[in-house]
Length: 236
Image (tube, rainbow, N blue to C red; front, side):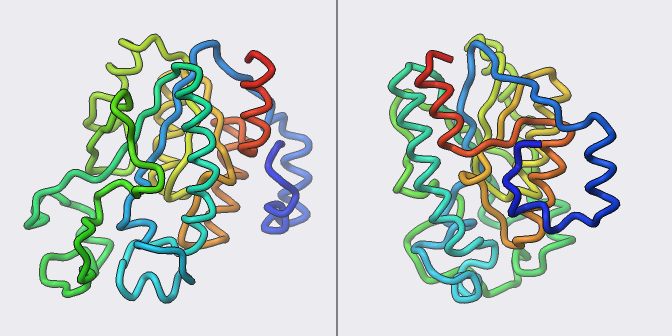
């Protein structure tokens, strides 16, 4: 397992033994033609500035607080490296009607997203707008989505086919939600996947940690941004 040891304190002694004996967590390795996927790094999930999460979610109900802004720095490094190598950089963001009708099942589980909720911040920034600190460049792709996985109901896979992509480096949020759903669907489509753990973020620290452990065990290689860049700089 490549997940940093700090994540493992969420595991029981029994879980550690199971992981050691099961054979899960093997390295799948990098592909030859990767794309960088930046999942939902928007103001709605980051807030409009770095601040403690309990302050941020009072104005931005989906915000992940200061952890988002820490991850954004690493996402920016990865995006610059991919662009320098002429590799695809792909963003996802929410794409809903203003009346929120097409949010569908999201409205069943998140009360503050409902149309009658008065929680949208007084800000010119739209919740589904990608954070300016890592704003897309002209050659980047932006894919609107309505459900957790970036693959569900979107043209992502057809774009990856057109680009000749065989592997994904996944970043963004939330680690336990849209990132994990995207990773599972990408794995199911037989892409090699790496998750940059310090370039992902979540509202709950426990969900972030256990999701990284689970993805590293079964669906992806969970690595730091530094490890991924080292591989790219070595000619990988």
